[in-house]
Length: 61
Image 1 (tube, rainbow, N blue to C red):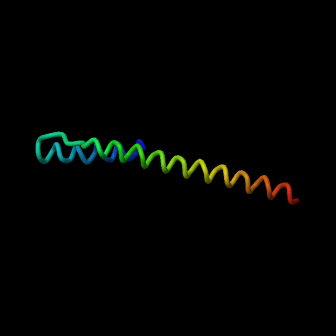
Image 2 (image 1 turned 180 degrees about the horizontal axis):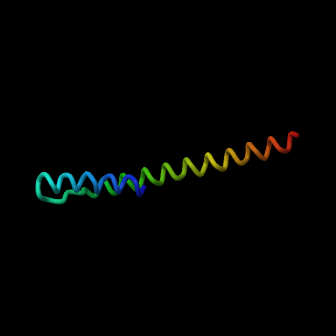
Image 3 (image 1 turned 90 degrees about the horizontal axis):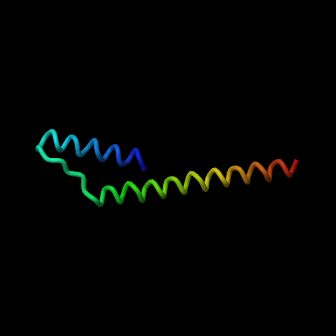
């Protein structure tokens, strides 16, 4: 989420340099937050799944 916000601010800085006004739309903030939640949930779910797979492999031995 932070990386997406930082990239957005970088783009807004380029717009500021070229056009003279700072433009960072609210929908981009919402998109960064939602992508961060989705990515964080996916990584957490994958970590839990891999941990469960390891536990089941240990029990089979």
